[in-house]
Structures are given as structure tokens and as C-alpha cells.
Length: 208
Ligand SMILES: N[C@@H](CCC(=O)N[C@@H](CS)C(=O)NCC(=O)O)C(=O)O
Picture (tube, protein in one colour):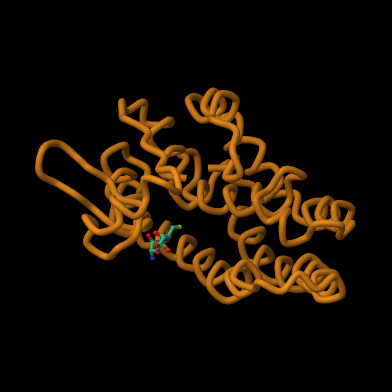
């Protein structure tokens, strides 16, 4: 998603993707033993996804025009972060490939949990183009990123729902939230991002 911000802002950068072989050597040089990391200029290094995203979003005016807009943007980002932490990470961390369990996850996720999280967003959007009105922000990006991961047929979550025929349910979820679906289309076609989504490297993290 950080690359989405860079694409919209038209910022030049070097896109470094580590191989499994390279990672152990780099890991020991990082502050928390984790990536992502952003090297900015000669002496600034930032870790933690959300810190990196906010840093870059501010640079390219994706955090709103004032403190109120910034707080609203944060509010939505935190809402999506709650969804990731409480609903998705437990599924992603689960090593068990039990078929029945996966069917149950998909059923609950698309039938109850996702709609519960999307409902307030649908209301907030109302007839606006983006959460903050006419101007796109980080809030729009985090919501659309989540939806692409969950509701596209090529999403990284696919491995967890493999052989689970839930695409119909995913489409159905989006149909119930037309404002959110409209947002998704506007964001995916946004100048800079549209071109990035078309040309980004195709790997298991295709949506990023
Ligand atoms: N809270 C951190 C989590 C970072 C994280 O979990 N990074 C993973 C990759 S997505 C990692 O570096 N894993 C390799 C390892 O821990 O050795 C963030 O959002 O940046």
C-alpha cells in the first residue's frame, strides 16, 4: 500500500523486495528485526508500516487539509487496522489447512464480520466521492486495499480460502454497500494508482 501512496504522489523510489535468501542478512541490520523499512534521504530510516504510510501520505497531501480531516482519516485507518488485527491476522497465522475450518471462516467473514465493518463506512461515505469529500486520502486507500485483498479473485487471502467457493458471497457483500463499491472503482482508477496497479510486479502479494 505504501507503493500506492508513492504512485499517487508521483514520487521516485527504489522498490526493494527481499528474497528468502537475502532476508536473514538484512534482518540483523534492522531496528526491530522486521520489514517494511523506508530509507528516506541519506540518514532517515523509518520502520512500522503505518508510520511509513503516514510519513509519505503527509508528504503528498493524503492526510487531509487540517487537523480535523487528519483525525477523520486516522479514525478510518484505525477501524481498518482493527479489522486486520482481530479478524484477519488470526486466519492468516493459522497453519492448519482444515477444510471445514476454512469454509467456516469464509462464511463468517463475508456473511457477518466484513458487513459489520463496512456498514459505518457506507454511511460515512454517503454521496461523497471520498471519505474526506472531493479529495482522496490515506483513508480511502486502506479501505480499498482491504477490499481488494478480500474480494478480488486473485487476493493473497486466497491461500486461506483455497477450494472455498466464496466468490459469490464476496460479490454479494460489495453489492450491499454501493457507496463503498463506488469508492473502490474511483480509487482503482485514480491517476497514478491505476497505472501502478496495471504494471506492479506479479507475485504472491499482487495487491500491494
Ligand atoms: N507492525 C509491523 C509488523 C512488521 C512485520 O510483521 N513484518 C514481517 C513481514 S510482513 C517481517 O518482517 N517478518 C519477518 C521476520 O519477522 O523475520 C509493521 O506493521 O510494520
